[in-house]
Image (tube, rainbow, N blue to C red):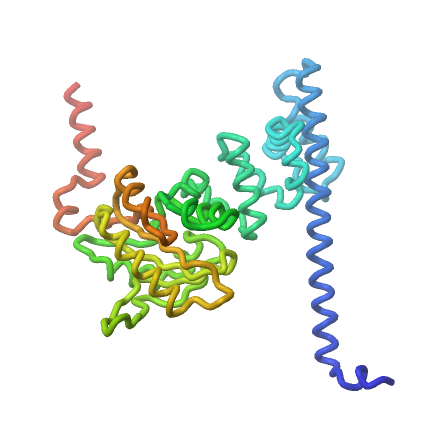
Length: 343
């Protein structure tokens, strides 16, 4: 026996074996999924070809479903609905090089979710790539599609092209959404920025999901002491892919040009007091309730620190006194019945 064999305990060795098994299972699952997607691709092609060249009537897919399930009772995926999905799947992506590179890397049910909701190939490609990069479950994917992530990603007003080198400027721009959807917050007016901060921290998991992959939370009302004066940053994060600090300031108002100046000051302070040699320039994100795009572009144009401005939306609860003035469902139904009886 050598010293290495003696030094390791059985529990440590067993842990290594378990890890090997887990890695192997993942590889097998990925290979099996890729094979399934490839099979559905070929089956979809066969179905599309035969539907264009034959006249079997309207019910041949239903007949096909019954025959396949009878022949292969232990296999899933041969329902009439799924067979239509398979045909549409091939029809949507046929002769597409992008799909052949990435299509087998996400599960079939993810593909069905994307295919049923996407209006274009560019939208479907976006969600395929995001699912692969972020490891989204089907439920998370559905939430991102529902929140119109494709339409919001990379849409904030920024000065990144002027203040950051490429390709960091492009990557930073893609991290900015407009608007940010904080629909997991339920607020009743009047509320203040601190109220929004409190709820964002309370719902940190959902907040991080909306911010996107790579954000690591550091703190709220982060204290900086500059020139014998105390300053407090609303929210401070670190982005592991961009390798930089990210300052987020919340303004429960319309964007004002002076907000950019204050954010520029915070970025300078973080760069001087927190940034290390291995970090890139600190980025600022200003979240406000409304903005004028041209005004915002002018405000950021001569700022020397990288920053972006986006709107945010949240769910507002009607106050009780207003609720009481609105008709109930029963009252609306009774009014409709009365109108019908009069006619």
